[in-house]
Image 1 (tube, rainbow, N blue to C red):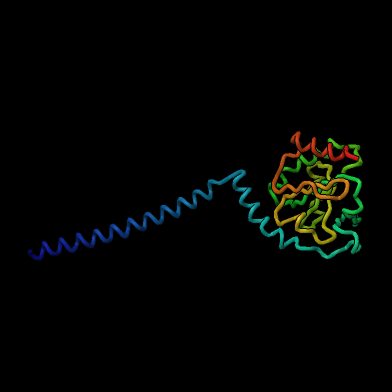
Image 2 (tube, one colour):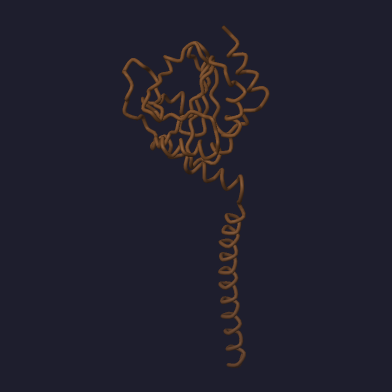
Length: 209
């Protein structure tokens, strides 16, 4: 084989090697671009759900047992915007609807109108109590949120450590207590609280003596 043939063969091998490396480089770039596009394409509910999942993962740490402000024998307690403390024990004889939420939590905000409508459906009924517990302990911010959205929902913050069977680290979480103070329902994640089955179940609890 002459020198020209050898040089051509060597150049061909070099070209093929460069082409292969370039092809691999392009494939990597395309893969990274696809991942970026996939992330950008997630909007609406999916994006909110991811954001909520990331933030709610820190709830257990951020809302870790608050220094007790209620008497030691009061049990689970919450405090309103005026500093008044209400204990779960003091609410025995009533059905208690406790919703753990935060203003930065999309699923919490999404279900709020239905909770407001639910409470309005029990207007004048003193055998049920609604407690909207801001896990961030930012009572002024959460109260302002309710006023800005015209929600008639009473806001509280924890005044005692929150038991893990009440709040396991995910919000929104709703706890339902019967008139004896026993937990009869614990719902994690957003819900439509105008659902006829939920309304019926609560009315049956309220109607039971």
